Amino acid sequence: MTTRTNILRSAVRLLRAAALPAVCVCIAAAAFASCNGSATGILDPLNVDDKEEEYRPVVGEPGEFAVVSIHEIVRHKRGEERELEVASMFEDEIFIDKNPLLDSSDIISIEAIAINDLPGFYKLRFHLTPDGGKSWRKFTSSDDRDVSPTLAFVIDGVLYRTFKPRFLYKDEDNVVIDGPFDEPAALNLEANAIRNFMHFSQQ
Image (cartoon, rainbow, N blue to C red; front, side, top):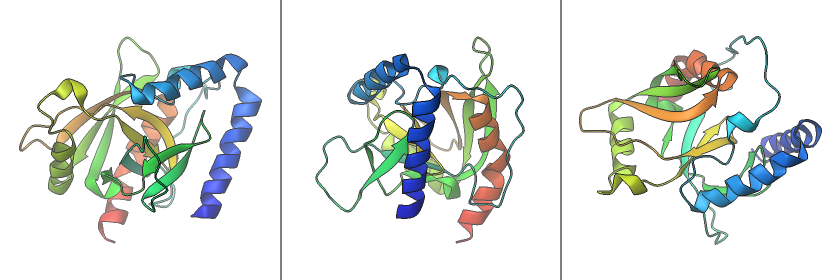
């Protein structure tokens, strides 16, 4: 796990140095600061310069591609074992609770929903297991839904963005994450979700 994390972190740093203009550093700093506020993203996909003009979903071995986990963000580090540093596009030190609130074993399928006024970007609809629905309701159970906790959306061990989860009513098993998610990420998640669910739910 340590080796994989180091490889991911090195790749992220290389991409950041080679592809992102200096202005993105300013954007990243503002985004990181927003973790303690109300903004929605550490990595805002709208600020990523390099886009694939043609996209083909990557469907590999289950459990290797487009694995989703959702975590609480560690705002005040205490050096506890549950704190985990994850690679992200813009920041070297992002810490999350390593125990996910939700992961691919809770997500039966994912549907990418095009955002009409934002071509090339998507929302995601999660179809959750009953246990996944219970977990989602638990961490969005605040009476004041405008102050829902900001959570980390992690794909394959890399922080993609932060988001505020929508409330999920009792007996519902579908929930939308607003994003936005860029097309490669959204379609990869959609293409691999069922296989990943089957893989992880059997473990």
